[in-house]
Image (cartoon, rainbow, N blue to C red):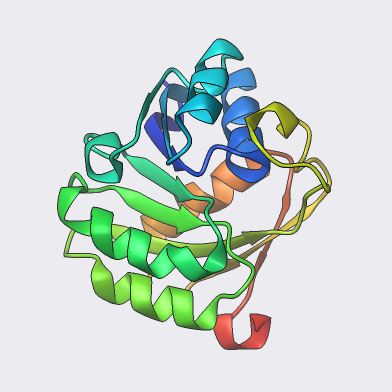
Length: 181
């Protein structure tokens, strides 16, 4: 049984696409739903096998997901999590790839209802290229991923996010969000 049954990736570019690729390659994800605004990029993601299907509607795209990875620009993460929060299945874990953590973690934890969990993350990896075509399975190999738990973090949700990044090849470092920033 894979670690993630249904992964919703919001922002299927270099960061989100690369995570999807490595989890698929390792057999640790059942279905991958890509969510974004660029239909051409999402169609390309299906053609390349990065995602199984896509949605231009974030609320519809996260339906039934047990893990959501928000890989959108930092300034959009809080709003995106607030928008999808009412549509998340019980037990769903939401994490992000934003490079700023304090405000994001606080806002996103506050936006989610009971039985859904936010764990802040910052994979320290990238290239100068963008879009799903730039994604590759080994992007996170040997890179650090900082995870920013809080006293409110669910231990099981935290463990799932840490394991996901370890599977991707990252060295996971736990750090307070304020110290990170």
